[in-house]
Amino acid sequence: MADRPGRKPRKPHTAQVVRTERLTPHMQRVVLGGEGLAAFSADTCTDHYVKLLFPSGGATYPEPFDMERIREEFPREQWPVTRTYTVRHWDAELRELTLDFVVHGDEGLAGPWARDVQPGATIRFMGPGGAYAPDPAADWHLLAGDESALPAIARSLEALPDGARVHAFVEVAGPEEEQKIDSDVEVVWLHRGDRPVGEALVEAVRGLDFPEGRVHAFVHGEAGCVKELRRLLRVERQYPREDLSISGYWRLGHNEDGWQSSKREWNAQVEAEQEGGTTASAA
Image 1 (cartoon, rainbow, N blue to C red):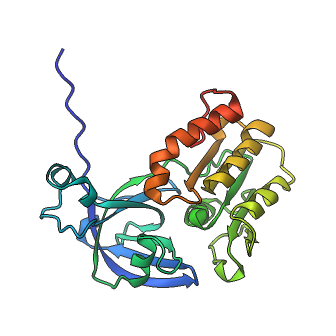
Image 2: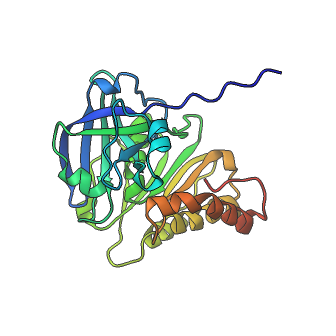
């Protein structure tokens, strides 16, 4: 039998910053464009995401940019650092990609970059990935998350037809972090204040008078909060796995590198605790 050909390495996209905008005190928008987006598309899922590639360890990479070559020729600590962001909007006609970043001062890597980057700067990224879009055949929709899930929730709301039955909950730091969304759905904005992340969100979803009929749910955000909501939906209310998109986008006390390296194990542990080791997935 002939050997299967290896999977062809994906090539990153190269884009330039077109413009930036501060949406709220802690949310920065960056719009990317340029000829490097000629092969890019993100119009099938409302949770499409890209993985931005940031140079690491002061490295300067040879052109043309080649991830396989970098991994072969550079030490591990100088490989590009990836940060994952949801596609807030993709304009196929203008070939412009909009990403929204949560910014907490100088904390992190991508947030300060988004805050400070100027038009004309170059950024490379992989993607898109994604798996969710609201099912129009569902009787009702549940959308719940924190700031990290807001771009996907907003995009999902804007994709739903007028009159769709939706319960949408978004937890943010305070009223100044609310955003205008082009949808007739009334979003329940939960103001965290000094409460722990996710506490208000779990409380609000638990207090929902759940409608009858088939739900299609999108629940994303901090992993501990998502775990509690997953228990509510999968274990207590016994909604089928295929009708739920549930995942921890981040976890308190972990940067993205640490969270991504432990996410599979975390999901398996959650599965074992909540479903006795069945094949249902927490991601």
